Amino acid sequence: MNTKDDDKRAGNLRAALEQPIFNRALGKEVGTGVLDYEVYLKTNALYALQTCSTELTVPDEHLFQVMHQSQELWLKEIAFEVISVIDALDDRRIHEACGLLDRIVVIQQCLANEIRILQTLTPDTFQEIRRNLGNGSGLESPGYNRVLIAADAAEHAFDALVERSGLALLDLYRGGETRDEMRDGLKRVAELFVDWDEAFQAWLVAHFMLVRRTIGVHRKVRALDGFPTQALAPRMTKPLFAKLWDVRVELTQSWERDGGHAPGAPRPSAGGETAVAPPAAAPRSTERAPPPRVTDRPSAPDAVPEP
Ligand code: HEM
Image (tube, rainbow, N blue to C red):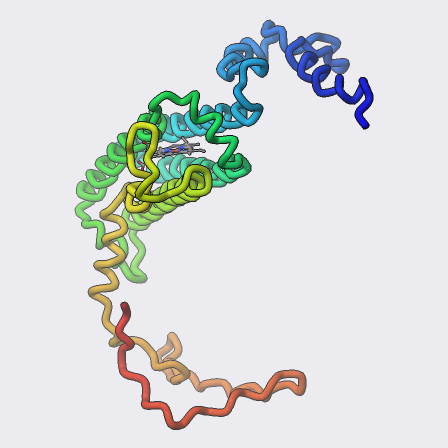
């Protein structure tokens, strides 16, 4: 049975969290909003962005707000970083552009991982919170819309640089073994754009699963603004940088088997001599005997058609 003290503990903490906290190491109260840290980061204004605990419909509404607000901030940050990426690309500062793109990729990956936190929200609790959302739509997310226009602008800057370098996108991947600093740098940038795109899509896929487990994805389920949840499925893998994905297709389409080595055949060494294949290692006593050879199967065709 709960004692009077047990009943008070949660209430006491709630009240204590609303008050300034004395930090013994500092010998000062934290939470008044006047310390340099608090002034610089505007922590009081930041905390005021969430509905106060006594007005929440359910406690999980706090998580719902913090999650959306933090995702908005990181999306804003991505778009902000893209300004510098474009600046660096326009000035041919490839190394710098790579560093910035790497940062964007990490943020985008964290955004996808963060979605997992909201998966702890059960559907019944979300139905309570949903009443407070008006006709709000995820498509209205300013952070998301910023990222879309930023990605578009970054793609234009990259295309322009590739063109100014006298190259086509496909050339970046067709250089073979010859080294060319500009081309290698541009290829690195291209691959970082693909990393970003992959992480962006992974974020939307994680979001799709969140929607599915929270409100359901079904022809009968619509968002608050009437948007059918089923329509999210084809959208989540729509690329930011379609041309970079198309390059892969082009490379594979123009691929030829000629010039390769049959599996197990001896390969010429770098000096032009044919390397002698090492003798197959004798199975150790603990290893299982190889499976019996199947002799009645038709021989494999030259090229196995891919789906
Ligand atoms: C329980 C949590 C969530 C639910 C039930 C939910 C539900 C939905 C639904 C139904 C849509 C379809 C479009 C519309 O709303 O009209 C949508 C789209 C969207 N939501 Fe969420 N959402 C959740 C969390 C989030 C979070 C944390 C973010 C982060 C900013 C987010 C961002 C978006 C974006 C960007 C779209 C547009 C996606 C697209 O263009 O396909 N959502 N969401």
